[in-house]
Image (cartoon, rainbow, N blue to C red):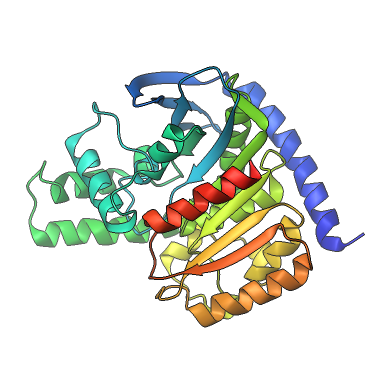
Length: 341
């Protein structure tokens, strides 16, 4: 048996046991607030995560009985920490002005003005979007002060705002070190949390548990392929704008949220295909992406297709443009999941 297949089997068994324990412990979903939208309901929900802390998510469910296919949408990094789930779902009307303004700006800049979570829910998908540790509802006090100042709620000088931004950015090191001191890895904890989100989505009565996918842009794409590789609930996945060669990665505080030393010491990023195979997976990248140069991405694609062989379940493509997830890319994502789920 291929060592990659064996490792994935072992990890999937361990993940299933961890999820069973976590699902028994979290005590169910706590609905904080719901809002009826055009063809679906958007709810803010929280539950206890595998590490014991409370995780806040947006849960979007189409109107009707279902069962509907489900998607775990995973937000990006972007060095913007005041919003997490709000990078993919339009905030509830009750949310603070600075959060709604921050979300709108992010969506306009990177998603052509479309909250993809809402678009998918309107198209008939049940969607769950969790806040990753250090983003959104799980961000720091300094981050919240920065957000309120930038979006016109509090008055601070430019120097004070700049100092807060630097403090928040460097705070990533402290999060990584704090988890490491407890014997945990930030990216591994995130994958367990994202796996629990997938399990909870699959448990919803209106959701078809055998039609759950994962999707993310940028760091969300990194989270998506880790989740698809090791979480048994995920049947198909999609990563937008995250693939490169290990030799091109530059060390920075932003790396800490994605760093899994045990994997990176042995495998390059395209080797993830060995863990994904034969699960259907779709990788897209911009041909002008300044973070992930096309020549490096193309070499990764070639290596991944070598691992999948003639299996048509791996699809890799480029789109015109840079590091973004605009309407044309979103259309490709929808077409993929329509085909696979």
